[in-house]
Amino acid sequence: MRKAVTDTASGILADAANVLALVENGERSLDDALDGSLAHPEQRRTTGSLLFLYFRRKRLIDGWIGNLAQRPPRPRIRRVLEAVLTQIRFQSGIAPESAVNVAVDLVKTVGNANEAKFVNAVLRRAVRELPEVDDSPAAVFPPALFKRWSRRFSAAELAAMSEAFLAPAPFTFRAEAGFEPPADWEATPVPCRGPFRFFESAKPGAILESEALGAGRIYVQDPATAVAASLPDLEPVKRILDVCAAPGGKSLLLASRMKPGTALTAADRSARRQEQTRQNFNCRGLDFSVVVAEPGELTGEYDLVLADVPCSNTGVFRRRPDALWRFRAEALAETVALQRLILDAAAERVAPGGQLVYSTCSIEPEENAHQIEAFAAAHPDFSVETSELLLPSGGHDGAYACLLRRSARSIRK
Image 1: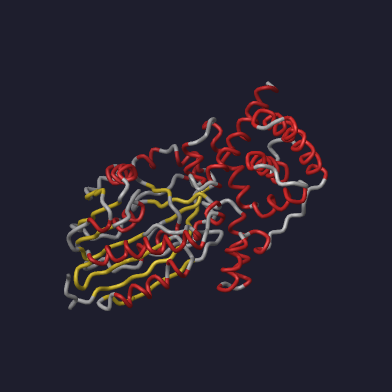
Image 2: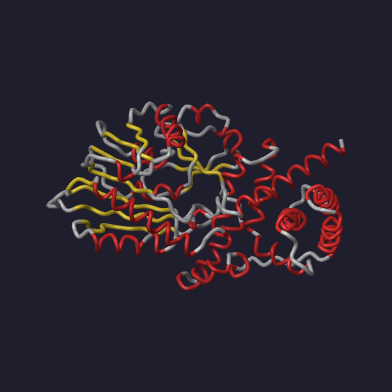
């Protein structure tokens, strides 16, 4: 039994170190690596919990390594230290002394005898010298983002965002019309924009295994997603296009507001993710068109076009804490350029007098307000009707959405 426990702990630590390598090298996001790169997928939940905690506490853990080690360890050994120090300081599932032993044994297999001795010395000292925990924004967020955000947000806003970043995001879902969550889900309503019904529950296991999920009576998503779908006026709308639809979450939000007889086309460049879009439509009996295409390849004109574009993900850091540590100015510039291409292509599909909704899950001005300002300057036949920036909090992710309208007198190219 003891060997089995040790083997499990070693497998979790090895998987954690390998995932950290993929994320650090820019090969995968944390979620993607956890979904497809674990040697022990049966331990995904435990490994994921450890790594999410590491990225939330990365400033502390990395600084601790710098204080404990007289010389920087090579990357493979450093990643083992990152994972095991997170266990020692913030988790109680494994005793610190046992965590040290597991780490040392693992390093013997991936490193050499000297590195095993080094790790043993560092971790024995770590157990004796636990660092104080500082939850202030300056001690939590990546330096580059903290500097950016300090110029835009108040101390109170930063403190609230830091608190949200450090806490696991609650499990939330949206209920379709006519469905009431059963009592044993212990689901409580949470506020959201628009006429939607979102709930929070501490029992995700029961919900994810429920018949209601497979039957399309509920959809797992964050209340912040409702912002974009709540902005347009759907009363006159007969034709809707979602240009970055997969896996269909925002299309479903719009569908719940559509008038009978309205047609919706869900387009996305990813054939793999569009299969999930089809499944989400089919289980709800929705006969919508699902198209695999780049935004610039689409044709036709629509009364409403939604462009929920790829972004830096800085608004969803509760669910993707690694996104903050992957943030780079160069990558931001590339993302902004891609967003501009998608937005321009989406605008071409808007009929005269029609509506265009642009949305992101970012809180960066370059991707949001500045992007819209540049678009409006280049497209005088479009006017901004309303916009909203939602900062991340304990109850929801961050999001941005803007509603624009094309002039009824606009002449299509």
